[in-house]
Length: 190
Image 1 (tube, rainbow, N blue to C red):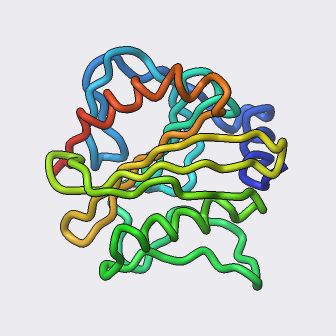
Image 2 (cartoon, one colour; image 1 turned 45 degrees about the vertical axis):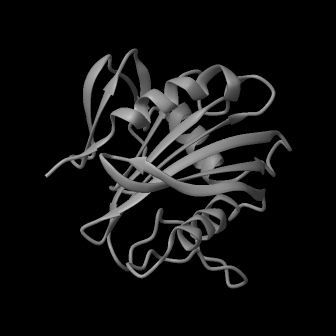
């Protein structure tokens, strides 16, 4: 089982991580983004960092929407135990879209999961220019094939990244439309 998933399960069982409903309507994410929701999502109080937020529709093993907001030069997407054989890179303002996706890949596979990028292309995001990428990931913990999509942009030297991931077999197709609706409403505050 991945360390992140194990920490999350332990936190949930111990009551350290709470869940609350967000939406419908306008919601602020980490004081940096505003999104408009057409229905409710479940927000988990456990975040990867103070600049991330995790939402789900059907539960974290079945789908996950992760916001990484305002990541500054030299900051990581998440605080993870560093491995000597594979360091999780930190965001640099000079990174191009493909390098940001590669950084995310290292983050998403820190537990030994496999990752394959499917597509990467420019796309409008958060009211301006950005990029969109698709990927598959096989979770090491249960060998379940996940399908994912992410959007990103850099504004004022800071990275904004929104990722949705769900099992390919059912939940991805069922919920990706709701994710795309969230993405189309994202605006950077301030």
